[in-house]
Length: 85
Image: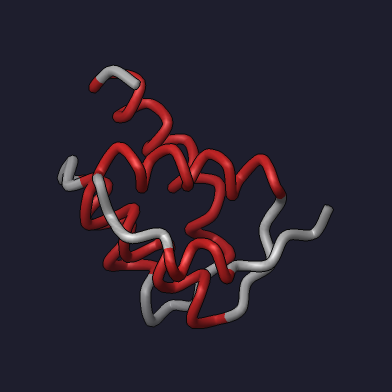
């Protein structure tokens, strides 16, 4: 993945999933995304989805997987997020 793809996918997945997380984490994710701090936005988003038990699609999980691998972040929490399909 190239850096421009990383930015584009980060923006897309954040916009798609941020509305599903609680107000506890949503401002952190959206403010980080708005500032271009995609590493913070994506890792916080994954943590919130995991902690809150939000169910996502397989495609959404795959997109997060690619982003987390790009960031070289641990995949432990992402692996535990349930999918709906």
